[in-house]
Amino acid sequence: MAGEKKAYPLRISAAVLEAMQRWSDDELRSVNAQIEYVLREALRKSGRLKREKAPPTADDENH
Image (cartoon, rainbow, N blue to C red; front, side, top):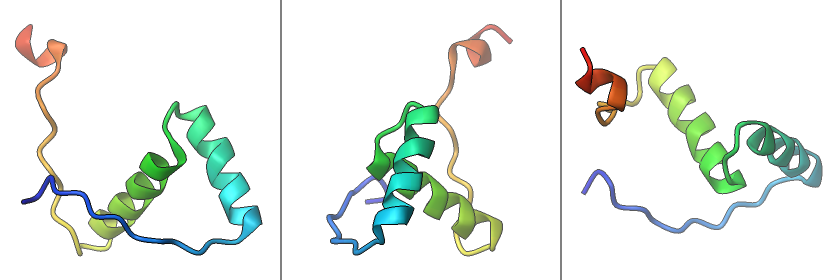
């Protein structure tokens, strides 16, 4: 269930959306993925969300 995605309509000011678009472009993410990333990081830093275990990378296999 942790990987389940749910749709949620979001009302956001044009200025904030434009800033998120620039940021997401810089990080090669979609705006949706960038918003989710920012929210997840804020929740994790505030102790409201446990850090998710990252999937193994190619570097992990070499060590």
